[in-house]
Amino acid sequence: MKEKMHILLVDDESDMLDLIGSFLQKQGFYIRTANNGIDALHLLEKEPIDLVVLDIMMPDMDGFEVCQHIRQTSQIPILFLTARSYEEDRIRGLEIGADDYIMKPFSLRELAARIETTLRRIRGLSLKRSRIQIGDMEIDQDARQVYLHEQPINLTRREFDLLNFLLLNQGQVFSREQLYQKVWESHSFNGSLRTVDTHIKTLRLKLKSAERNIKTVWGVGYKFEEDE
Image (cartoon, rainbow, N blue to C red; front, side, top):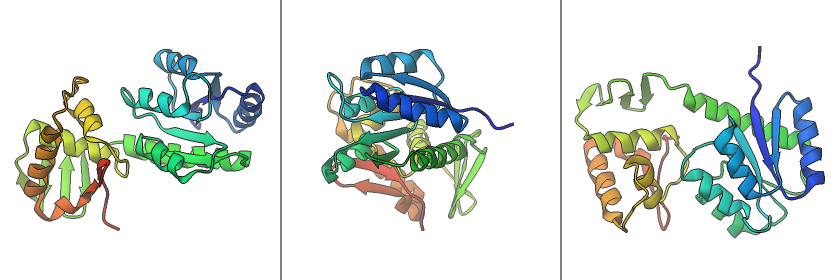
């Protein structure tokens, strides 16, 4: 039996919520709705949600702000809805942690397909194998050990946590502040950008040829990306 996934729809237009919600329920999703960002954040604290469909243009707290709040504590997939076609908005949304972006007006079937695709990808990442092979590198998550050409690489705790976090969120760009908060488990960053940069540098040196998988996104931060 297919697992019923929980979708949170966030939009200040009630008609839009009703239209999307009704369609997605018929597709087999369990739907919760919120008319504003504050209610959406409260729902996320109380209920199990698998994906958020989030409108950008909302009063008081827009979708960008909601996304940033969510990303402080969660990597739940977020799909942005917007009537704005500005490239800067799309780039900003993806940079702050959105998984996908769909323009209004849109086909409900396309929205459902985007949701299914995102959930399949996220489920694939969350079904962590004890050992993950990427090119010449192998990561044993249970043993917290990395191998290169089958030879163990000695990483510090923070280096392993940093590599593992980027790996499990591959393709997503994280700023230095976000990496510090997620890996060092601290929200008091104190402007110490060099802490993250130093660990990235030493991690790359230890990974040798596999260091190419850790990409620098200039002006933004870092991401993990497999070779094509």
